[in-house]
Amino acid sequence: MKSIAEKRRRMRIRRHLRIRKKLAGTGEVPRLAVYRSSKHIYAQLVNDLSGVSLCGTSSLDPTIKEALKGLKKAEKSKAVGKRMAEIALEKGILKIAFDRGGYVYHGRIQALAEGAREGGLRF
Image 1 (cartoon, rainbow, N blue to C red):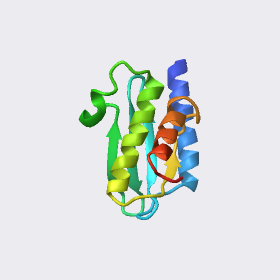
Image 2 (cartoon, rainbow, N blue to C red):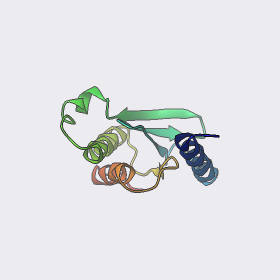
Image 3 (tube, rainbow, N blue to C red):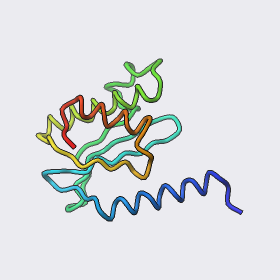
């Protein structure tokens, strides 16, 4: 019998694959892919047509790591979203397709999306 954690992971992957059937990033509108671990959150912009990751950041990024100390995980996620927006705007990317990675859109995933919107990205 599979553990509850394994079952939840498999269900998330199934949801992610179902979302990915409908969602793809291009050069003009890349996909903002999100991965959430128990401690950290990761985000990257992906061009699925060429199979290339354009840029990425996480809560481990040295440029924001010091500022994140003492914050709650949702607050860290919002800061990562803002950092992702900064990086994207430097590369001239204004519009993205948000890929929540099979996670429910609340908590840390929602905070990352709000941070990216506040940083200037359009979904």
